[in-house]
Amino acid sequence: MNYAQIVGWGYAVPSRVMTNLELEKMVDTTDEWIRSRTGIVERRIAGPKETTSSLGIRAAQHALQVADLSPSKLDLVIVATTSPDYPMPSSAAIVQDGIGATKAGAFDLNAACSGFVYALSVGSGLIASGQYENILIVGADTLSRWVDWTDRATCVLFGDGAGAFVLQKTDSPTGLRSCVLGSDGSGVNALLVPAGGTKSPISLEQIQNRQNFIKMKGPEVYRFAVNVMVQAARQALSAAEMSVDDIDLFIPHQANIRIIQSAMKALKIPPEKVFTNVQHYGNTSAASIPIALCEAIAEGRVHQGSHLALVGFGAGLSWGAAVLHWGVSTTSVPETWWKSMVRNVQTQEEALRLFALKAHRRLELAGLDAFRRLSNGHDA
Ligand code: ACO
Image 1 (cartoon, rainbow, N blue to C red):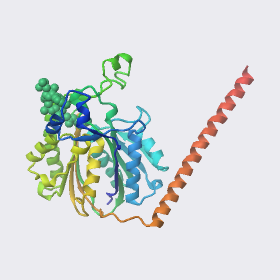
Image 2: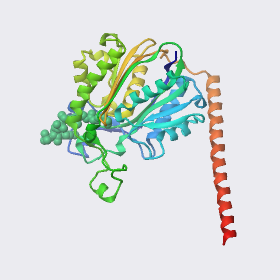
Image 3: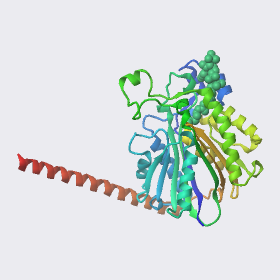
Image 4: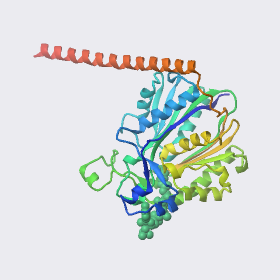
């Protein structure tokens, strides 16, 4: 039997920190309101050159280094995002190219803030089926680009970032123990960006009406979030034949500390078993659970044999909960000089291969162009 073991992890956030005090100068809000209603103190905001894929690439490079895996060994790249670089192509294609995963397929997955749990489920399933051996899953979002910075009800909530994990085939029973995915599309209007898709393509009128920004019915999403987190966590635990006591650490989607506290109280999970970092990053959407998991590992709260529960919710409305059995050591071993050298050579080899591929494509296009000009000349 095949299992998908997490063997590499990494995250990336922009260096630009935006504090609540800064927001006080932009909209009619206060640090006290934001802290008491959401738990958020600061968030990271992408710089002009940073994108969902550039953050995803940085996170993926860390994850490959921890996994000690050459990018050419990846079979598939899945990027969970709701704020891709372009409507098309996928951000996954840009990440695949950026890390030099020359033999991998790539696609985006959009389940909003639940996206990482969805990607974990899809990636684990493809490995369990025997189709693939190494899959990179990335949760990345730059919602700051879709936030209306004049709307105090939403602009205080979101931040940017990316987290990445390498899943690898193993025959030891580890990785995903259970997973519950859900959707209630009747709640589409509770949280959406109305314009910019095929239903309402971007237009001057849409921009003037600020329809190209996030619109949210906050209290409605709040009620949904608490209920669905409790329900999905219970279902995932029951599917794994486990109870709250068997879980070493809960990693909920980091949207609002009050949502997390209410859900954890209903589940009777003590605060010391819950990881939170919403105070530092705000809601980073699909990146929130992977960033939190990476920070939990760095803080020594995840060990070989640990049982973890991940619970996400978001636009859609969507939700996902998973129980994970952690299979590898999390103690970081400093990279030896020769390993680092081999990795550098491999990375350069992949970069060279990509360069050759791009040069070949350009030459082909130039040849085609010359041929067209020649034939037009003959026709004339
Ligand atoms: N500063 C000061 N006052 C504010 C602010 C602000 N930033 N935002 C709203 N208010 C005001 C409102 O205008 C309202 O004023 P009023 O009573 O005079 O009308 C008052 O505060 C209360 O507003 P509510 O919306 O009822 O406040 P609530 O306690 O529900 O908190 C919040 C709002 C934080 C948005 C909460 O509803 C929430 O967290 N909802 C869930 C949001 C969420 O998690 N979304 C992401 C989902 S994940 C994804 O897919 C991206």
